[in-house]
View (cartoon, rainbow, N blue to C red):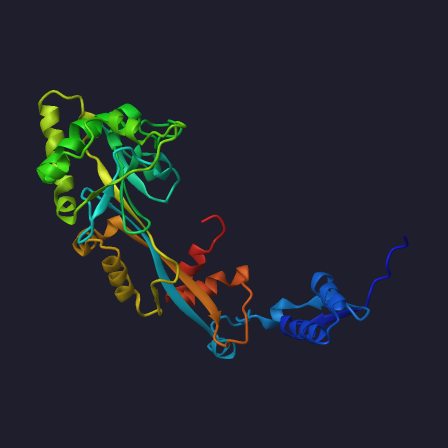
Length: 342
């Protein structure tokens, strides 16, 4: 088959090319429309799209305020998740569902960009939070989880270091969690607790050998004093000779997995939005304000055209300018934050 002759090139901006496609579609010629979309070829011509002619920012003068006037865009924010680290369980006015046999698939296994100080041979060092042995302790609400961490069981360089030994989980339940719950829960309710970890595992195992998930509800009154009870029982057990020194220094990570677009706010409404998010998810406001560096809120930013008839195509070289304008930060900070590899 002979090579196809080169077609004459017709320059288009993004806007003019979209208008061309709309015209082809309106004519009802589906074949021409599909070919034009996929190849840029139409009526014996080859479209060449000059995207920079529709740029929002003028490359010669990026600080020109007229750019914003000529190409207006709007922004909205959405707080949809959070992560909080605490020695206490920071849930108020809401029961939690406690797991005797945790769902190991819900352990923190991947990096969340945070570190935790642990001691190795008496020397303190910071390691990735996901490297500290942990397991799912409880959940509350629809998708929110409380994960318990044991830095005393951290081993440097160990693969899958997040995993806790089953024997340690069983010992902690039988020697610490169960007695702590018996102190906090009324006697009649506490009698519902399994005597051992193995007993609960046997109860949950189905005929085909799979383990079904099961959680026990703990009232907000029990939740309020549970962490303190756990530490008190732990120290009593160690004083009585139990080899539980590794459990000292345990802490909790609260993972809030919200719903997208459930907490949308304008650029100037961040404080109120976070307050609502905290209240709606029954997080202790005192815990957040007392230790603000231990709480991290994930806010998504949506940038769209101010005109409902337009759409914006993202350009990598606009990251700095967008970041500068949306977050009202100095140019130097925006440049540093958008450098490749950072």
